[in-house]
Length: 425
Image (cartoon, rainbow, N blue to C red):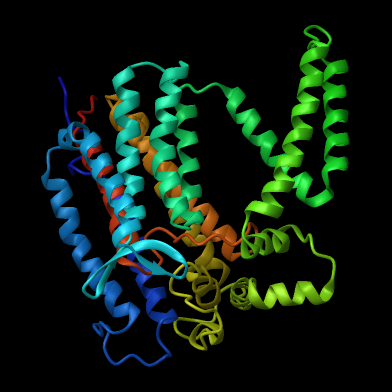
């Protein structure tokens, strides 16, 4: 006999974590976008008032998502994906340029960023593709289709000069590994990352010599299955070519401000005057963000008591740098609890994904977890100076209707899919 283990149809813990994160995010937006004096929290001329309206509309959005049959999302996943891609293409004709990125539709006084919703559409398309093949993603044809589904929105968004959103699509690699992608891809990807960092930091010659030394070690340490000399030689030549390519890409393809961000992160520039100039022009937000976080100490300065937050030392703090408000006003304890809540949400999604009865729901659940994890890791790492500055929002925290609605759709579609399965005692 089958019973529903949960008295509540939808996963109660996931929903609670969602509302706690959204609520705490709004509290920090309120502090970051005010000067310490609040006449009315419903003031729509200020970010905290607008965000409150976005949250209210989110409740209607959630109702609509849960009202639809769960099969709707699988059945119409291809149509949703195509519509989403067309919305990205339409930006080249009707889009509005904001801060150098052609990523917005302006409709009256409202702006919509379709790249945020494209992540949800891509997650549906990937889930549909992998569930249709009914096997692990092992054949070249299946891998190629999966890559194309990711590559299309990535290139469209990259052409709109929104590099941050483009990088998020790499998160689908986590999904592919869960569904049987060979480990060699992970090894190659990690090797490329290390080679790129070594090339930029120490130059082509040292990188090539290091690669050669590692290859020799592999050759002499693999006693039973010693790699062929031709393979080792080819690996060395390939690593050298990659080093030259990385240097060319950095010097001739990347824009000056992108070069400066990487240069500051890896500390490539040695001239103190140039470093100071770069910090003033590029790393000002980062420096002020780090100061705000460090000033919070253990318990923080208190709600709306952060001098750097209320003093507007961090420009546009209520958007991508909202975590610096948490650090200053709520201290290490508040920051740690925020991280714990995000980790709890991610682990809960992964746990529920493994309980799914069909592959579509499982793949979609892992897609949700991967996208949220990438946003969370990059945003907090950026705010703390652990990775280069990349402009992507912190899910459920950063100001903006498009981001909040897109993340809500992403999460609650999975909640709907999860509610549709039947548990057994």
